[in-house]
Image 1 (spheres, helix red, strand yellow):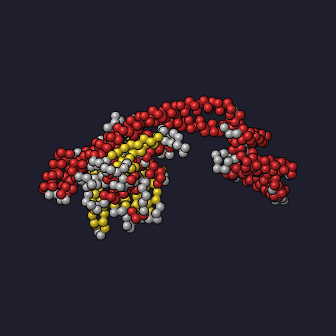
Image 2 (tube, helix red, strand yellow):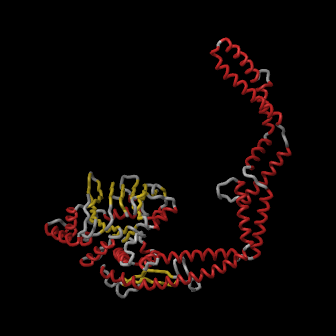
Length: 584
């Protein structure tokens, strides 16, 4: 559910902060006031394509953000977030809160964040489509996606659990078939692979690799290669320590003797003398260690050759068996990891014949299960499609489409050869078709020209779904936005549209842009969009109406003004149909 919406520098909007409630919300206002801008900003937040000209004149960027509450039973949304390590904030026992932000700069670049995690526009579109349906402008409409047609029918027929069970069986069958394909490789291919893997295991085993040895060998090799430089440095240091006429040892010894004598005269020097004495002995120790190191320092050309040969072998193994861009590990660990993987594959290939027989039996059993479950789904879907088609057609007649014929086609899947086939959700394709007028053939919904008609089809579907036993189901889209739903209707039809919107609003959050008082009067929450000019600039604004403000707005919608007759008519409508929840 959309709880808060903030819009900055979008078209004629300077800055707007709005809070929304559950139920049926309407947006009204004079023609040209900017209702389409509000819907456009929401479309922008839902991931719609946009141009830099939506940025308010004189500004560097436009931004829209929202606070959205997500029902804890909405598995699709929560699973989407979980797979991307995005966490919601707790908001009571039944819901969690998430913040979504999107902006666009005059350079054409923009950014999108979900809970301060940067995501792509495609991610945003995918995520928001799980929460919102926007109808009327042919964007963000799950109604136009055939996959959603199956979900609508399955929800009506209460088949979600059956479909989930079928999908698991189908996936298991697919995995077994892939394993069989691998096992059915020709014996020659298998033998060639075994020969290659056995050679690799033998080569790596023979190398007797130890973790960290490449670095150690590189350091030793560097020392042997630069031995002459090292000897030069050692000799220079040795002379400075003790071999030169004026050496570090001789100087510190003279200084120590002098300090001993001085501290015997002035005891205040004893502490300094003690510290110097420690330094003197430390220098003597260092000199002794240094002499020992020098005495053992020898150049061994044979060892240098051994080091270089060993490194060459390890470099060769690394090049052959370490995958570029693979797991982050030491070179030695990566080589040994390849050996482990090769040994596992060898075992699999050696047991291929035995595994093949087990796979055949498992595949046969799974194929029977898939066919049985698919036939059961088809039978239930076919029966429910007739019922749901009739129900939606009947509702459309009440919504100003008296000649509409709605049909849910259940078409068996076929492969390229024309034979029956199966998919992860069954053995048929589900498609919603409609004929809006008498004599016209059934067409897919995407070919409906009128946004208002498409909105009414969605309203009919949502109403029909509520007639099933799972009326209080909380999964799926939680907020529906209807724009242009009142196109070409009035009178009793408009009253019916308002009635159906109110019914849907009991279970979903509804936003409806309307010009009809008979629809607006039924709203739980009423927002007015207006446009004003200040200091030579035009601004679009929106805000909730109080009971009195709503009374005047309904009167304006009825008669174009708030005269006594219009107000009286508004009072009658409000008394008969009104359901406004007062704003603070």
